Image (cartoon, rainbow, N blue to C red; front, side, top):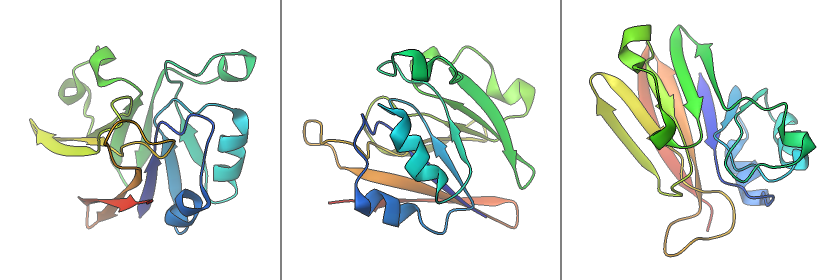
Length: 151
């Protein structure tokens, strides 16, 4: 299974980002979406599981959850925008991966047996950080992670 992961689009989603997400079985958007059109474009590729980020304002964003748990291939994912607002103990509830955005910095680390994954920002460049999306593959119940540079 291929999980496309995108964050911090801030109303701008490039053709390169859409191409990079082709072939995803599902897509997670970790917040700061910007407008509903971004989600509509992603939904043409695969089912989308979004969360609201700190810049997702307006009526359109009110229906988005601040966090959500989703399960793929027997693995439980907890999705939120800002890792600093993580107020649960992922291990105690059986979470296998925490997906987040906000910092615009791609990162993957294993802590206490849990994958913490940030796809970086797919929107406008911020500082010297890369513009990218992420992928998580689940093969034989194991995760592999990667980033696709959009520049």
